Length: 136
Image 1 (cartoon, rainbow, N blue to C red):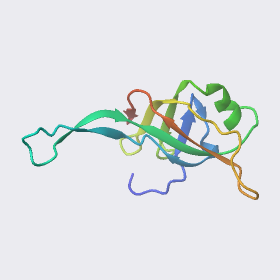
Image 2 (image 1 turned 30 degrees about the vertical axis):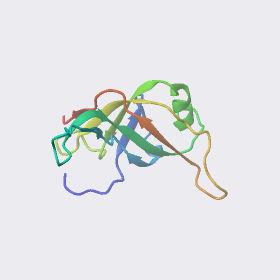
Image 3 (image 1 turned 30 degrees about the horizontal axis):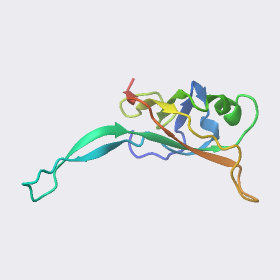
Image 4 (image 1 turned 60 degrees about the vertical axis):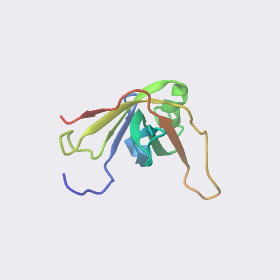
């Protein structure tokens, strides 16, 4: 897969495919703590990488119908659930890898918007544990 348009990203949360309600996603944003190891005799800062961290940010089209966004996510608040993201709807492969991580559902706005806006809700959930990558 070469350069592609980001319109067929697939997203599942706790085994439920919510792709048709996702308008934007920034998934598995991995960071690493910056640990300073500079000793008194050094004249330049030295560092090592520390503990890794990650999060997933998703904007959903708000929907209260059964088996849709709010009904699926409301009971998950405070629990860690599997989140999977694949760049396209094509088969998982080396050029279309699937990332999976366990996210702690820490927030779920009931409603968020202004007069005339599209009804959307945005969440950012921290990842707990390691992220896996499948290529087949």
